[in-house]
Length: 459
Ligand SMILES: Nc1nc2c(c(=O)[nH]1)N(C=O)[C@@H](CNc1ccc(C(=O)N[C@@H](CCC(=O)O)C(=O)O)cc1)CN2
Ligand SMILES: Nc1nc2c(ncn2[C@@H]2O[C@H](COP(=O)(O)OP(=O)(O)OP(=O)(O)O)[C@@H](O)[C@H]2O)c(=O)[nH]1
Image (cartoon, rainbow, N blue to C red; front, side, top):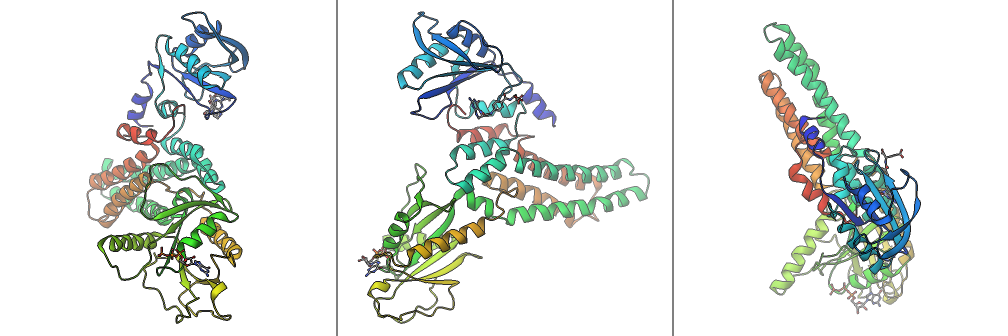
């Protein structure tokens, strides 16, 4: 543990925080209280402190007036054996809005108790060394998880999957650094530096390889954000009809994240346990106006980033077989041809398309062929997602740290034979710092607001 974290850990929070931690609308609400006045607060409202870690029935009253507020359960978790590492208490009360408000108001009247900010319980758990930053992020993801795939990934992260991996990388780095530094210490004995450095090199190379492999693996990020399936085609091919039909079929519609207004229509679905985002892109053709041109430009961007592109082709017009569409699907992305409007096509119209990785004949209007398509999509995404729980760099923050670390390792390796020991050691140290920022074991003061802002109140 670095000295920086030790100094952070030894800082005792003086404020006691309280908030509702249960979801809204339930019959029972859980109020959590954390900090030095937690015990005092429970005593003020219930008249006593229950036996540690045992639920006990409690009559709650407002300490200012003596008015009875509710009958609930009280729990007492003396620190450091608690979720935050501080003294903690819980009041489990009836879930009505007014009851919750009255009990919270009574709590905030206790000296030293104030409302908790977003993520503040978890932030305290982190500052008290109960979890690393990747685990805290995993918890945020766990709370937000809407599909089975997201849940599994978030669970792995919340319980140390990535954190352990990163600590393993750092341990390897520290071994390499020790070897290089041994060279510094014995600088007057001619052989030691060269030998120690030679021993360290394979470690550094292996670590760089591991970082590069982790950076190249996009599965975790795809599962977390949802696989992007772009629906593309000429105007009127039936793209909107298809997206509507797919969204209405055998798939659960996953709620959309708030605050993301996009001009490209998106629908988030749960396809066999994986989150999938269907993206309806503007019909691709020669643009007639500025607005349309911009729509098409954006459509092309989304298509290039998609995990799979469904090219919808209207076969009702008897138009010639579809040539390879003029689009740039991303590297490794699938490109499927959907021959649409087969209900209105003469039988046997099956466009040849050697460029397509798969072909489906469908009618978005009548639903023909959509069941098979949905199943194929679920299989495609499940295959892409396989192994995603493998320690993965699922956030930009993780990728930035890993890229920074890899950069320093590359710099060291590029001039391994010629650089001074001190300079090699410095590059390795900087790489270690970058990894340390990922787990939060060093230098993260500036990151905390960003990380914990995305939590809800009460977590
Ligand atoms: N009612 C309730 N349910 C909840 C939580 C909570 O705070 N309250 N949690 C909120 O996060 C999660 C459970 N997390 C927890 C994590 C650690 C400890 C805890 O007391 N840890 C001690 C003792 C462990 C033990 O009994 O062996 C420790 O680690 O020292 C409690 C809850 C999910 N469910
Ligand atoms: N017969 C038949 N008509 C269809 C089918 N799918 C779509 N259509 C019709 O084709 C027309 C265009 O459908 P849309 O879904 O709006 O096509 P689009 O590709 O989204 O069009 P743009 O947004 O202009 O690019 C509408 O009149 C639909 O009713 C189909 O499977 N069979």
